[in-house]
Length: 566
Image: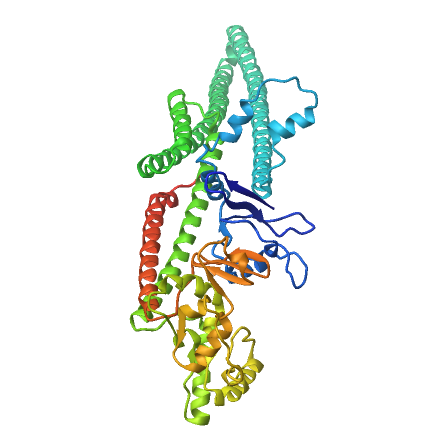
């Protein structure tokens, strides 16, 4: 899905949009892009199969396109929106929201239309992945809430049972005390009875002097029994008191253990929150927003000041989301650093080759050429194979046409040149290699067939701007460029069947298009130094990007020390 725009000042077109492969399950990953020109239909529909291109097919087609302004993809929606906004005059990020709020009041006649236009913004692509992650995280919170409720219910049930058990123990203790008190009262009553009997016996002793000795012995025995009963009563009372006190001590111990456990848990929670807060406050760099940290800091300060933990779960949720967001940002930056490292290594290898005079031709063509040289040397003792661009040189004073002519030739400048008599052997090698794997796109020039006809070049053709190192190459060059007329202006192009301007505008088949001029240049002795300069500039740019990303990554290194509460 794409939209084409035109800049009124420069009258230049650019295209912005997104691409995504979407199946029956409606799941997709958006790929945002911007193109500095109109979007040709071939980017959407394959002309050969007449089928829509997939994302991977479009990437390959875009990479192979000869146009200078190809699709530029953006890895994140934020980066794409920033680049797109810059094309409209650096609009603020909240421009669209403020624009809706600035609309004049009109009575709402259709609620659905109102919500679609001013609230839900359904015309824009919904970020399904972000929505799913939000729903999944909400469901996790709901599940955690239910688990906490179950734990609270279980604890309340335990407290209720504990109170019931304590009440029963107290009742049993009272019952045991009543029983022991009844037994004690019974003993006291018996003691009183015995004392009464003693008094009666004394009176009888007075009356019965003969039985005095017997009565005295009985009295002694009864007094001894009374003493034993009194001692037993004291022991029973002590046992009853000790039992009650032990129950009270056991209950107090349980309460004390619960208080100590809760105190320890609270201390652990505040310690962990304090550690997280300390890491955030000490390590958050200036270039990282501290909005979330401020909210969490204020919440912890409230808990410390008031001594309550009512919103501890909410603070922990904010801390968890903050950590996850920063970890994702850290991963993206590290991934970009790895990609840049590969590009830097490739650029260094290319510079080393250029300093040795080796132009960086595509690996496929270079490998094929090396194998063909070895094949011809073994068979004929002569293995000279060159690329077409090595056999060409610009006419002095015509170097300004370098970009346009090389863009027009495209991959043709990489065609291989062999002696006419070796062409068939080279073709046999091509077929032999093809059996071992696909090597499409490599060209071998049949100079013998080309030179059966002498091709001339029109006076104003771009063939006059380039010259071959020998007559055979010159004749083939005339065949390629002799009908392409060099024009000074775009308006002049339509006067000829094929026309080309210095700035890369090509008119052919009744169609005018702009060629991609941002390519590597191979023709002429000056192209080597030009490539070397461009490669060094690219390496410098890549290193600057790497340094910037490494600084940003260092600013997020503190996130590995942070964790949310379990």
